[in-house]
Amino acid sequence: MSQMTLVFAVIIAGCTLVTVLFSSVAAKLGRLESSQKELDQLLRQEEDTEAAFEAYNKHLAVYNESISRFPGYLIARMYGFRQISADEDDDLL
Image 1 (cartoon, helix red, strand yellow):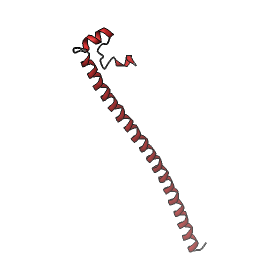
Image 2: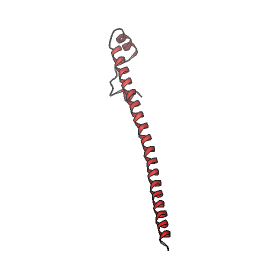
Image 3: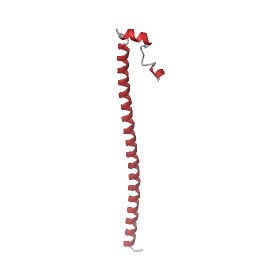
Image 4: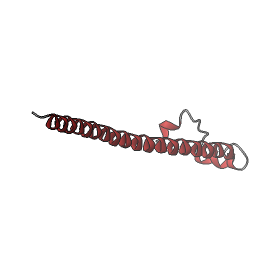
């Protein structure tokens, strides 16, 4: 084998190795991007859930306050409404 053929063989082998390495890195980057999108979606869902809980707790406080004051107190007693704590609201669902 001549020196020139050997040099070309080494260059082709090196290019093949680089191509394989780049393909592997590109595949891993694609999986990382997909994982990042999933994590972003989970974070948005968690933020939405937290906002819903905050809104629910505010409404629960308004409800409890309204049935503890006049005239809401009288109407609540007539129809069996009672105050609800945040701990027991799971039983209502």
